[in-house]
Length: 115
Length: 115
Image 1 (cartoon, each protein chain N blue to C red):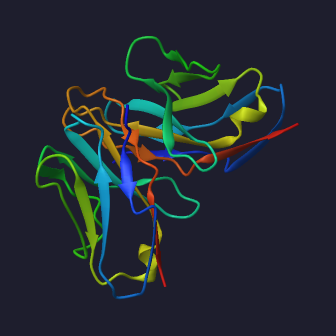
Image 2: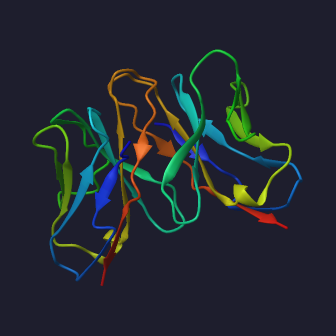
């Protein structure tokens, strides 16, 4: 079946611009996570959705970052006034949300480059 | 807060030789432990996980990991590696709170198999 998909696969933008990154989770998965992976690092947690609501946004680095999931399926990560330090691979993962032992399935990521 | 340490950033190993990738974690509560693998040009995939019960867990492709609570370790081993095992391996931990299984990752170990 279809896995987690993310679009675009690559995004190049200029400092100060606004970007949106999209995640399509596995159908029926209620839990959705965003992570950020900088060069040479492991993924770092940004935000977690259960259904439509952000249950934990403690990983968002500052108020330039925002994410939504209005219908409990597709999610969009929004970054305002991008900075060069925002350059990274942004990963999305989903799980069924039915148990604490669920496996998270990751998408291929969006590589964001801020010039 | 929880953290994960992967002591080796790169591990070169001859084909058919054994390998151990080290992982140590710290947490104030009980945890679930994971190994994820990222093959070249692919997304993160779950390799194996420890949730409870037997401290030795195995993957379908011959890897195994043992949870050692006293040493707070979850090292990954394989008795004989193949070229196809070339990848980056990430150890991760979650606190297993149902409703938010956000993962904390180590910085990764790049396994290179030498023919």
